[in-house]
Image (tube, rainbow, N blue to C red; front, side, top):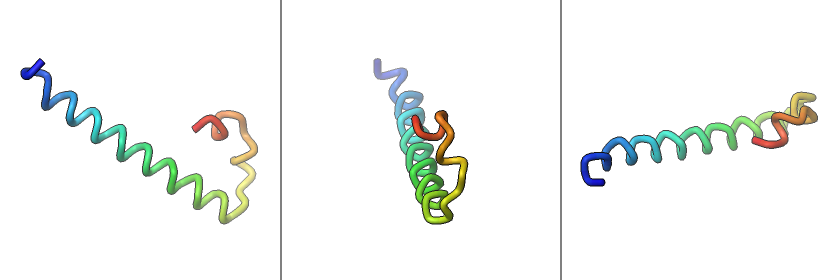
Length: 45
């Protein structure tokens, strides 16, 4: 497990940044009342 620590750490950090990015993007769309938010795929993100 120790040999995979750095790979897992970077994967976790990348996932956390992507999650934050999508949250900020959805907030931006929500403020602009963008029609893309009505789409099913965006609703799942």
